Length: 55
Image: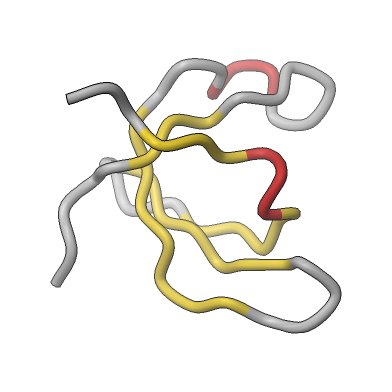
């Protein structure tokens, strides 16, 4: 499995998750993706909502 190499960026959607690490499990059409947070919660969201984490 991949590491949690992304950061949740949007505050308007899932505001309590802003700044938390996540990973992309699958990419879909219309710029959507399935993400998973470190606690196991999964969502289908826009790819604009996640950013690469700084090394």
